[in-house]
Image 1 (tube, one colour):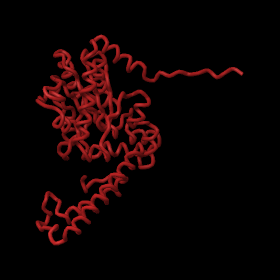
Image 2 (image 1 turned 180 degrees about the vertical axis):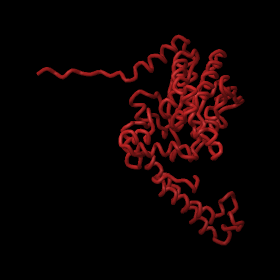
Image 3 (image 1 turned 45 degrees about the vertical axis):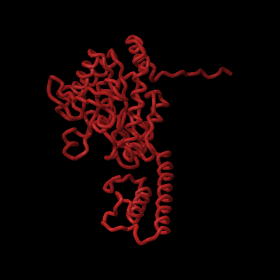
Image 4 (image 1 turned 90 degrees about the horizontal axis):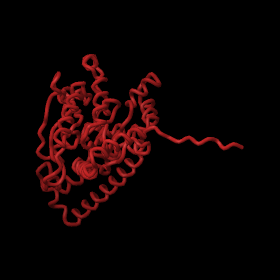
Length: 348
């Protein structure tokens, strides 16, 4: 974990990790050789080495217990913070870890290419793999990439690019996999002039009747229409420490309390019911994909494998359905949202 960025609630864990790193350096376990080049293990004797190993095991056990406790009881606002962690994997990283033969496709054939949306053909799963069209948000890692990607806030040309590639997948009989990770669509003047709302609305309409299986996963942030623009799917899942909501906590706080600060952001996050467990309970999503203890930013590889297994499993199920069954299932999935039964009070 980066020492330059740490979550407030993880400070006790960071302290334990520093102690573990120091103990490993004393033992000479940093790559087999201590960072200063000295043989720290030499001269301490077998009993000394055993004592340091026992210390490391004890510290690692404490770290695991603490991480388990902290991540089992995350508040909604802390969940948002974890979803925004700079070391959390993004679309391009997941593509590199779980996809083969990725061929990126660019442009919306109307205005230009939006780097905030990544699209391309790939294979996912055990060889030979399932051919898919991958569509996902990209926030960027380095500052220059973040600026180029508008911090994951796509322009209308990004959504039109996504739709164009999904329609290409439909013509080729290839399923679509979308990875959602955006605080929301780009709200700038140029984006509005080029039809931001219209582009998202058209995507939602066309995805609702796309004649190929669609699996969507919220891998980090799922903010408002920016997320919905690529999330109308047969199966919608969320990674355990992601969030999905009509608005960001800061946006909600600014509207309700005219001020976004720690207190109002936390209250807004709780009221929005934006966590994966909340969305599953409300019927907005169909599945929660587990993350390793301590979040995806601590173990990218395990998270990627969990994501791959969930996607492959669901695609195999969806491919057993006829296109007409698929479209009806997709329609009913969204049609039943917000439906509830109201019981009349008993007449005394």
